[in-house]
Image (cartoon, rainbow, N blue to C red; front, side):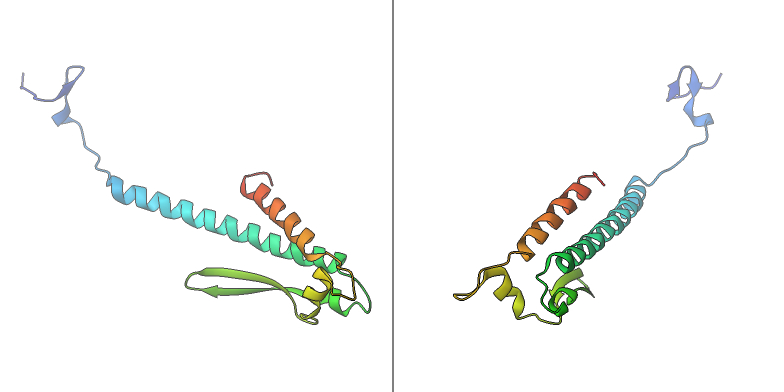
Length: 131
């Protein structure tokens, strides 16, 4: 009977095939997969949030001729630091502040802040997993 320094339940470990796993490499691979999936999910949620905000602003904007309300768009800019989405009024940008906050001669018509607050609440809910 041969002598074995390492044995489990009487079996010599030297007789068993060994499997080598590079834990650092494997963990790095798994983390990259999780990061890619989380980034894709986040981009989807933010895209939906921007589109929802645009739709709500178009619906709740004051209507005179309809040009202001239809001017809401979302632009997307991709850079080395990430993706930026901007919601703005392209047709009448100077009216946003005047309508939202009013002037000495006109009362404010708050439509931007409530839409943003609603969008933030919905986005937070989705990020917490409450699709």
